[in-house]
Length: 316
Image 1 (cartoon, rainbow, N blue to C red):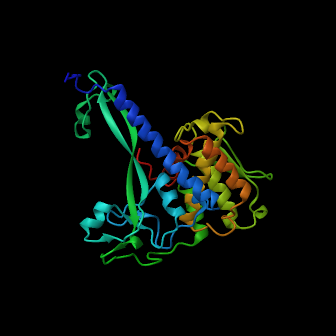
Image 2 (spheres, helix red, strand yellow; image 1 turned 90 degrees about the horizontal axis):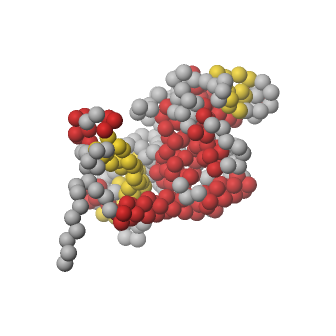
Image 3 (cartoon, one colour; image 1 turned 135 degrees about the vertical axis):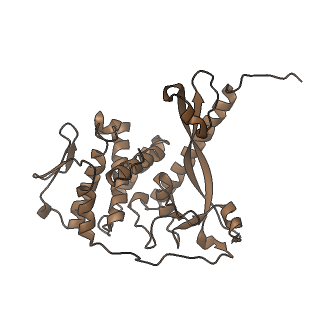
């Protein structure tokens, strides 16, 4: 049998092609799961958080982010805690017969020397000139089980409502007041919008809103838009505004919807009014997601970055 040799770091067309196919399969799987929920009348980014907090890994205590957050929320499990099969075994537990794992995904990154094409371990990146290194990302899928589908473990759950309670409206105000260099905020007229050239949010007077919760819900939508300004996250849908109905316009609106949903839940204003699951709204996003399988995961990731930036927890 003939042996084919290739230089270290060189990638075959087959390996690149198979990786692309795996990426497309992950995009499609997550999109189809969300489409299924929308068809059931469930809007994931308008789902209230569990009283015990965000969906999190039980062992690491880390909350899930991006698309993982919205997917797990949409299933409305008894507890917002999850484990991988390996973690279940490590804790001496057992997955109940008939249980079904749910997918979650993360971006993994590969660093390569631009000259040689060789892969560079993350631990060695400090030894390289940044201009000499290329970075490429790919999605990797894992599977988790909700803890109510696991037996044989003595669960230690947090107390409901633990910690010092801050009044809802005070929490709402703090989001804008404590945002790093927030956009200008003015009131007047009957429309709500963000102007990127002036870096300004305009909202109707508060008295025109049915409640303070409704007011802040609209403010958060526009605040997410403002995170895309060139001085902040430099997001295409804001730095180069798109015409209504275009792919980039739809993506920016979904980013704002998801980000606002996060802030509404964080501050405790995701009430029944904000949960209006209108048929027209759902049908609109069903059409968009069926047309673009990458829209959901990409928008969820950018919405998470926007939220992290506004809350001052952006990692860069």
